[in-house]
Length: 315
Picture (cartoon, rainbow, N blue to C red):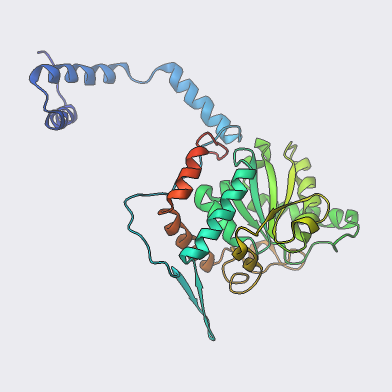
């Protein structure tokens, strides 16, 4: 047959021939197909569609699905802790099989209630750090972030007008740094979540977030959410996920979680500078250990498969 070969074409066809055991006649058809595809090139309409899609992704209107970390080729892990942080008087052991199972169940309960295609998750303070680490393993900072809330917030139940006016500029800088710019553009609602007995932090932070969203011309709304063992005692407007099915989540408020695995060090917005806010290495190690469990979690993979239509993360 008349076929002008390139080295790449020849290698490709030879590999196909070895794999499929084809004869010379099918081989000729393959050769013609290779040259035909090369001659046609990308269709102009598809190139324009791709460009339009990229522009929409940049504006936060479309995105990619959640990651599915599961890898069936991975060998099982030991049931004990995967990471240990040394301290002068004790060792902090984290991410055992039982610890991880409750973290995974709590995170799936969150994603089941709040579709990540329509919501962005903000961990307020240090306590929800394990949940934020789990979420970031599915979508990075395009899905979840931590926000410092150690001080700098108004008194619980008090007036907030003066505080909002005085802190608006400073708070806006933190929001711009920690929340991707596509989030307010996309209209996705912000879920301010905490592990708490009082619901104080999401309740007091919400007005500042609403004011910032309004300044961005965003249609996004704010959801105040507490993981708590006192779901019926939260302030008005604070929604709750009962931690009874995963009681270990309550421990995130205390040692050995708080102050150990949080993404950022304790940081008071009213007395510290934004440049002082730097990620902690222990958080990165903790998140990596959680990811090792996630890669072997078949239950999580089945759950994520049902969310296959979810797209809320930009390319």
